[in-house]
Amino acid sequence: MSERMPQGGLPLVLLGGDGQEATRWLKSLLEGGGYAVLQERSAQHVLERARSTEPDMIIVDAELPDMPGAELCRTLRADPRVSSSTPILLAVREPASRAQRLAALRAGAWECITPPHDADEILLKLGSYVRAKLDADRARAEGLLDSITGLYNRQGLARRARELGSQAFREHGPLACVVLAVDLEPQELAPNQQGSGVVGRCVQALKASARLSDVIGRLSPTEFAVLAPGTDAGGARRLAERLAGSVSGPATTGEPAAAGSAATPSSLRVRCGYEAVANVGYAPIEPIDLLVRAAAAVRTGKMDSGNWLRRFDEGIGTTAP
Image (cartoon, rainbow, N blue to C red):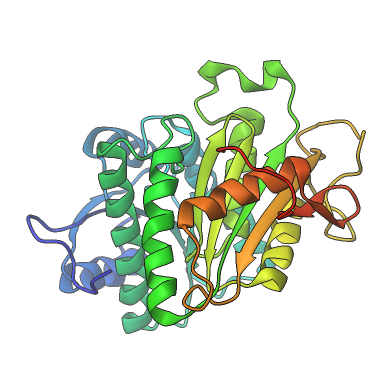
């Protein structure tokens, strides 16, 4: 993606803060960096503006008069009128501890802005976040996103797979796909959830565990795919372990919950399948086939770790995901 901001209007940032020294510098930095800034002083007004103006980014001061900033992040992220692709950042006035940063991430913030402040670094990160949001908006308009989760749908995954495959072919680089299946009860897939509940928690866990370069999509109500550029078979296994551990809940080994365990929000049973090509230039593969193989591996692949992680088996036929 280009480093320049898109033409046809300045990206709009909604800034929540009291307007004093704590956020004045940030407003000045944003305006100097080519952003239009709309500032509100209270959490309630930020929430109302976010619903009505559809900003390209929301930055919230950690200390607001009517609500802690982290709680506002959580409220914004849960609001169906705020796009799931909208970057939400928390501006902390003092150097943040690890516990504070983790709490902000759990509340739905993409990142914490903490001192010491590096203006160039901040602007580069914000630019990346805004471009990702605009790309997601464009994909949604073109019918490439799942309406419930905001992830790529099958059509979107296919397009992104072709793009990543072309890039890997030119660069003679590796490419992998991991498909994660979650065992859920029918009532946990109610159509009115709109990405909340168990499915919503799975989506948030996948987003938090994947890299920025990874492409996440939804193949079916209970199957998710992650396209991982620059990733060989070993990297795909590690990615699968990280994704499964994040989705299934805390575990000392990093592995998902054991087979037969209860499917609760903190302990979901997951299965993973993967396929990877070490050098797409030397061993070209149709990018769609990578998706198909990883999806088939979940059901019929060769066991790679216990009974939950499988790699595609050439000896077994495949069907479309």
